[in-house]
Amino acid sequence: GGILAGYIFGFCIQLLPLLSESMKWRLMLGMGLVFPILVLVNLAVLPESPRWLVMANQSEQAGQVLSDLGQTPRQVLRTVSSIEDEAALERRMQQEQQATNATRTTNAPTLGQALDCFAWTWSPGMKLAVALGFWQQITGTEAVLYYSADFLEHAGLESPTQRLLGNCFVGLCKLVPELIAMQTVDKIGRRPHMLLSAVSLMLTTFLLSLSFYFHWPPIYVVILLCAVMASFSLGLGPFTFLVASECLGLTERAWGVTVAAAVNRMTSGTVALTSVSLYEGLGSASFF
Image 1 (tube, one colour):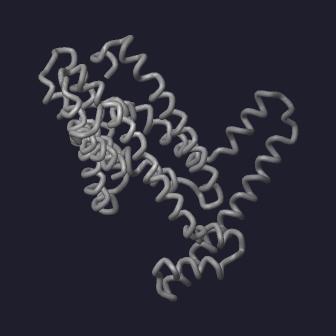
Image 2 (cartoon, rainbow, N blue to C red):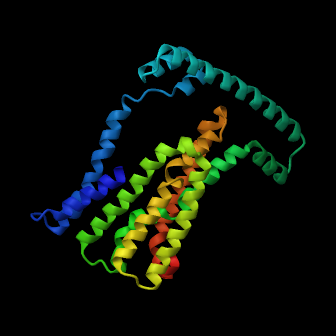
Image 3 (cartoon, rainbow, N blue to C red):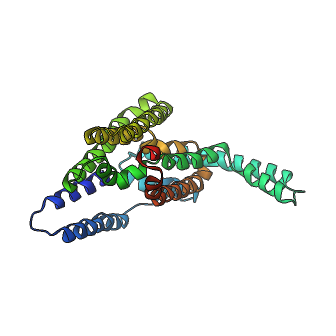
Protein backbone atom coordinates (compact mmCIF):
# COMPACT_ATOMS: atom_id res chain seq x y z
CA GLY A 1 0.00 0.00 0.00
CA GLY A 2 2.80 2.43 0.81
CA ILE A 3 4.49 1.83 -2.53
CA LEU A 4 1.25 2.46 -4.41
CA ALA A 5 0.61 5.61 -2.36
CA GLY A 6 4.08 6.88 -3.30
CA TYR A 7 3.43 6.24 -6.98
CA ILE A 8 0.08 8.04 -6.81
CA PHE A 9 1.60 11.03 -5.02
CA GLY A 10 4.32 11.22 -7.66
CA PHE A 11 1.77 11.07 -10.47
CA CYS A 12 -0.39 13.79 -8.88
CA ILE A 13 2.63 16.05 -8.34
CA GLN A 14 3.62 15.58 -11.99
CA LEU A 15 0.18 16.89 -13.01
CA LEU A 16 0.54 20.14 -11.04
CA PRO A 17 0.85 22.89 -13.70
CA LEU A 18 2.28 25.65 -11.49
CA LEU A 19 5.40 23.78 -10.42
CA SER A 20 8.65 23.68 -12.38
CA GLU A 21 10.23 20.33 -13.21
CA SER A 22 13.03 20.93 -10.71
CA MET A 23 10.49 21.66 -7.97
CA LYS A 24 8.40 18.58 -8.83
CA TRP A 25 11.13 16.03 -8.21
CA ARG A 26 12.17 17.82 -5.01
CA LEU A 27 8.59 17.69 -3.75
CA MET A 28 8.35 14.00 -4.66
CA LEU A 29 11.52 13.32 -2.70
CA GLY A 30 10.38 15.42 0.27
CA MET A 31 7.06 13.58 0.50
CA GLY A 32 9.07 10.54 1.50
CA LEU A 33 9.47 12.08 4.96
CA VAL A 34 5.76 11.94 5.77
CA PHE A 35 5.27 8.21 6.29
CA PRO A 36 8.48 7.63 8.30
CA ILE A 37 7.38 10.39 10.68
CA LEU A 38 3.99 8.72 11.09
CA VAL A 39 5.73 5.41 11.78
CA LEU A 40 7.94 6.99 14.44
CA VAL A 41 4.92 8.53 16.15
CA ASN A 42 3.09 5.18 16.22
CA LEU A 43 6.17 3.31 17.47
CA ALA A 44 5.87 5.28 20.70
CA VAL A 45 2.73 3.30 21.58
CA LEU A 46 3.90 -0.06 20.22
CA PRO A 47 3.48 -2.76 22.93
CA GLU A 48 6.09 -5.38 23.72
CA SER A 49 5.64 -8.79 22.10
CA PRO A 50 3.56 -11.13 24.33
CA ARG A 51 5.77 -14.07 23.32
CA TRP A 52 8.90 -12.27 24.43
CA LEU A 53 7.27 -11.28 27.71
CA VAL A 54 6.31 -14.90 28.43
CA MET A 55 9.83 -16.10 27.60
CA ALA A 56 11.17 -13.39 29.93
CA ASN A 57 8.95 -14.77 32.74
CA GLN A 58 6.59 -11.80 32.57
CA SER A 59 3.36 -13.67 31.86
CA GLU A 60 1.22 -11.13 33.70
CA GLN A 61 2.43 -8.29 31.46
CA ALA A 62 1.93 -10.52 28.42
CA GLY A 63 -1.66 -11.10 29.46
CA GLN A 64 -2.19 -7.35 29.82
CA VAL A 65 -0.83 -6.72 26.31
CA LEU A 66 -3.11 -9.41 24.87
CA SER A 67 -6.05 -7.90 26.72
CA ASP A 68 -5.22 -4.45 25.34
CA LEU A 69 -5.14 -5.98 21.87
CA GLY A 70 -8.73 -7.14 22.25
CA GLN A 71 -8.58 -10.71 23.56
CA THR A 72 -11.10 -11.89 26.14
CA PRO A 73 -9.84 -13.15 29.54
CA ARG A 74 -10.38 -16.77 28.43
CA GLN A 75 -8.46 -16.16 25.20
CA VAL A 76 -5.67 -14.46 27.13
CA LEU A 77 -5.34 -17.43 29.50
CA ARG A 78 -5.33 -19.90 26.61
CA THR A 79 -2.76 -17.90 24.62
CA VAL A 80 -0.38 -17.40 27.54
CA SER A 81 -0.61 -21.08 28.53
CA SER A 82 0.07 -22.14 24.95
CA ILE A 83 3.15 -19.92 24.74
CA GLU A 84 4.43 -21.18 28.10
CA ASP A 85 4.02 -24.81 27.05
CA GLU A 86 5.75 -24.22 23.72
CA ALA A 87 8.57 -22.28 25.38
CA ALA A 88 9.14 -25.07 27.93
CA LEU A 89 9.27 -27.68 25.18
CA GLU A 90 11.65 -25.59 23.09
CA ARG A 91 13.96 -25.07 26.05
CA ARG A 92 14.14 -28.82 26.72
CA MET A 93 14.87 -29.50 23.06
CA GLN A 94 17.51 -26.78 23.01
CA GLN A 95 19.20 -28.19 26.10
CA GLU A 96 19.28 -31.65 24.54
CA GLN A 97 20.72 -30.17 21.32
CA GLN A 98 23.40 -28.28 23.23
CA ALA A 99 24.35 -31.42 25.11
CA THR A 100 24.65 -33.29 21.81
CA ASN A 101 26.76 -30.49 20.30
CA ALA A 102 29.05 -30.49 23.33
CA THR A 103 29.62 -34.22 22.90
CA ARG A 104 30.35 -33.80 19.19
CA THR A 105 32.75 -30.88 19.62
CA THR A 106 34.73 -31.93 22.72
CA ASN A 107 37.65 -32.96 20.53
CA ALA A 108 37.14 -30.70 17.54
CA PRO A 109 40.06 -28.27 17.33
CA THR A 110 40.34 -28.07 13.53
CA LEU A 111 38.73 -25.40 11.35
CA GLY A 112 36.78 -27.96 9.34
CA GLN A 113 35.31 -29.52 12.46
CA ALA A 114 34.47 -26.06 13.81
CA LEU A 115 32.60 -25.22 10.62
CA ASP A 116 30.76 -28.53 10.84
CA CYS A 117 29.78 -27.62 14.41
CA PHE A 118 28.49 -24.22 13.24
CA ALA A 119 26.37 -25.79 10.52
CA TRP A 120 25.10 -28.35 13.02
CA THR A 121 23.72 -25.61 15.25
CA TRP A 122 21.48 -24.32 12.42
CA SER A 123 18.25 -26.26 12.36
CA PRO A 124 16.62 -27.13 9.00
CA GLY A 125 14.01 -24.47 9.77
CA MET A 126 16.74 -21.87 10.26
CA LYS A 127 18.38 -22.75 6.96
CA LEU A 128 15.03 -22.63 5.19
CA ALA A 129 14.18 -19.23 6.69
CA VAL A 130 17.48 -17.71 5.54
CA ALA A 131 17.11 -19.28 2.09
CA LEU A 132 13.60 -17.85 1.74
CA GLY A 133 14.87 -14.39 2.65
CA PHE A 134 17.53 -14.68 -0.05
CA TRP A 135 15.35 -16.11 -2.81
CA GLN A 136 12.58 -13.57 -2.35
CA GLN A 137 14.89 -10.74 -3.42
CA ILE A 138 17.15 -12.53 -5.90
CA THR A 139 14.08 -12.76 -8.17
CA GLY A 140 14.79 -9.14 -9.10
CA THR A 141 11.36 -7.71 -8.41
CA GLU A 142 12.95 -4.84 -6.48
CA ALA A 143 14.48 -3.71 -9.76
CA VAL A 144 11.02 -3.64 -11.34
CA LEU A 145 9.75 -1.44 -8.51
CA TYR A 146 12.74 0.91 -8.51
CA TYR A 147 13.34 1.25 -12.23
CA SER A 148 10.00 0.53 -13.89
CA ALA A 149 9.89 4.12 -15.21
CA ASP A 150 13.26 3.57 -16.92
CA PHE A 151 12.09 0.28 -18.39
CA LEU A 152 8.97 1.98 -19.74
CA GLU A 153 11.06 4.76 -21.25
CA HIS A 154 13.23 2.23 -23.07
CA ALA A 155 10.07 0.47 -24.22
CA GLY A 156 8.87 3.65 -25.93
CA LEU A 157 6.93 5.70 -23.37
CA GLU A 158 8.54 9.12 -23.72
CA SER A 159 6.10 11.13 -21.57
CA PRO A 160 7.04 11.35 -17.86
CA THR A 161 3.34 11.50 -17.01
CA GLN A 162 2.67 8.26 -18.89
CA ARG A 163 5.58 6.56 -17.17
CA LEU A 164 4.37 7.65 -13.74
CA LEU A 165 0.87 6.42 -14.61
CA GLY A 166 2.44 3.11 -15.62
CA ASN A 167 4.14 3.03 -12.20
CA CYS A 168 0.74 3.45 -10.55
CA PHE A 169 -0.61 0.43 -12.41
CA VAL A 170 2.46 -1.60 -11.41
CA GLY A 171 1.91 -0.65 -7.76
CA LEU A 172 -1.80 -1.47 -7.99
CA CYS A 173 -1.04 -4.89 -9.45
CA LYS A 174 1.34 -5.49 -6.56
CA LEU A 175 -1.25 -4.61 -3.92
CA VAL A 176 -4.47 -6.24 -5.19
CA PRO A 177 -3.12 -9.84 -5.44
CA GLU A 178 -1.75 -9.53 -1.91
CA LEU A 179 -5.21 -8.61 -0.62
CA ILE A 180 -6.69 -11.59 -2.45
CA ALA A 181 -3.99 -13.99 -1.27
CA MET A 182 -4.56 -12.87 2.33
CA GLN A 183 -8.09 -14.24 2.10
CA THR A 184 -7.07 -17.63 0.71
CA VAL A 185 -3.73 -18.49 2.31
CA ASP A 186 -5.27 -20.23 5.35
CA LYS A 187 -7.71 -22.17 3.16
CA ILE A 188 -5.36 -23.25 0.38
CA GLY A 189 -2.10 -23.35 2.29
CA ARG A 190 1.27 -21.61 2.12
CA ARG A 191 3.03 -24.01 -0.24
CA PRO A 192 0.54 -23.77 -3.16
CA HIS A 193 0.71 -19.98 -3.01
CA MET A 194 4.50 -20.00 -3.02
CA LEU A 195 4.71 -22.49 -5.90
CA LEU A 196 2.10 -20.65 -7.98
CA SER A 197 3.91 -17.39 -7.36
CA ALA A 198 7.31 -18.79 -8.36
CA VAL A 199 6.05 -20.46 -11.56
CA SER A 200 4.00 -17.47 -12.70
CA LEU A 201 6.89 -15.12 -11.92
CA MET A 202 9.19 -17.23 -14.07
CA LEU A 203 6.75 -17.21 -16.99
CA THR A 204 5.92 -13.51 -16.84
CA THR A 205 9.60 -12.53 -16.57
CA PHE A 206 10.36 -14.66 -19.63
CA LEU A 207 7.54 -12.99 -21.57
CA LEU A 208 8.85 -9.58 -20.47
CA SER A 209 12.23 -10.51 -21.90
CA LEU A 210 10.58 -11.46 -25.19
CA SER A 211 8.69 -8.16 -25.26
CA PHE A 212 11.96 -6.23 -25.25
CA TYR A 213 13.67 -8.60 -27.68
CA PHE A 214 10.90 -8.34 -30.28
CA HIS A 215 10.14 -4.67 -29.52
CA TRP A 216 6.51 -5.15 -28.60
CA PRO A 217 4.37 -2.00 -28.14
CA PRO A 218 4.78 -0.21 -24.78
CA ILE A 219 1.30 -1.23 -23.61
CA TYR A 220 2.41 -4.88 -23.61
CA VAL A 221 5.46 -3.99 -21.53
CA VAL A 222 3.22 -2.20 -19.01
CA ILE A 223 0.92 -5.23 -18.82
CA LEU A 224 3.83 -7.62 -18.34
CA LEU A 225 5.46 -5.46 -15.67
CA CYS A 226 2.12 -5.52 -13.86
CA ALA A 227 1.94 -9.30 -14.33
CA VAL A 228 5.44 -9.74 -12.88
CA MET A 229 4.50 -7.84 -9.73
CA ALA A 230 1.14 -9.62 -9.49
CA SER A 231 2.93 -12.98 -9.69
CA PHE A 232 5.33 -11.93 -6.94
CA SER A 233 2.43 -10.78 -4.74
CA LEU A 234 0.60 -14.12 -4.95
CA GLY A 235 3.04 -15.76 -2.57
CA LEU A 236 6.72 -14.81 -2.56
CA GLY A 237 6.00 -11.22 -1.58
CA PRO A 238 3.56 -11.45 1.33
CA PHE A 239 4.26 -14.94 2.70
CA THR A 240 8.05 -15.35 2.67
CA PHE A 241 8.49 -14.20 6.26
CA LEU A 242 5.25 -15.85 7.34
CA VAL A 243 6.58 -19.23 6.18
CA ALA A 244 10.03 -18.46 7.60
CA SER A 245 8.67 -17.68 11.06
CA GLU A 246 6.40 -20.73 11.07
CA CYS A 247 9.35 -22.99 10.22
CA LEU A 248 11.29 -21.77 13.26
CA GLY A 249 10.95 -22.89 16.85
CA LEU A 250 9.99 -20.34 19.47
CA THR A 251 13.47 -20.06 20.99
CA GLU A 252 15.17 -19.48 17.62
CA ARG A 253 12.41 -17.43 15.96
CA ALA A 254 13.77 -13.98 16.82
CA TRP A 255 17.31 -14.87 15.77
CA GLY A 256 16.18 -16.75 12.66
CA VAL A 257 13.85 -14.06 11.34
CA THR A 258 16.50 -11.39 12.05
CA VAL A 259 19.14 -13.26 10.05
CA ALA A 260 16.64 -13.94 7.26
CA ALA A 261 15.71 -10.25 7.15
CA ALA A 262 19.38 -9.22 7.07
CA VAL A 263 20.09 -11.58 4.17
CA ASN A 264 16.91 -10.36 2.47
CA ARG A 265 17.93 -6.69 2.72
CA MET A 266 21.51 -7.33 1.64
CA THR A 267 20.26 -9.21 -1.39
CA SER A 268 17.77 -6.42 -2.13
CA GLY A 269 20.54 -3.82 -1.93
CA THR A 270 22.77 -5.85 -4.21
CA VAL A 271 19.99 -6.18 -6.79
CA ALA A 272 19.22 -2.45 -6.61
CA LEU A 273 22.87 -1.42 -6.93
CA THR A 274 23.69 -3.72 -9.85
CA SER A 275 20.45 -3.58 -11.88
CA VAL A 276 21.24 -0.44 -13.87
CA SER A 277 24.75 -1.62 -14.75
CA LEU A 278 23.49 -5.06 -15.76
CA TYR A 279 20.64 -3.54 -17.76
CA GLU A 280 23.03 -1.30 -19.68
CA GLY A 281 25.64 -4.02 -20.13
CA LEU A 282 23.37 -6.93 -21.09
CA GLY A 283 20.53 -5.11 -22.77
CA SER A 284 16.90 -5.17 -21.76
CA ALA A 285 16.02 -8.61 -23.15
CA SER A 286 19.03 -10.38 -21.63
CA PHE A 287 18.61 -8.55 -18.33
CA PHE A 288 15.12 -9.96 -17.79
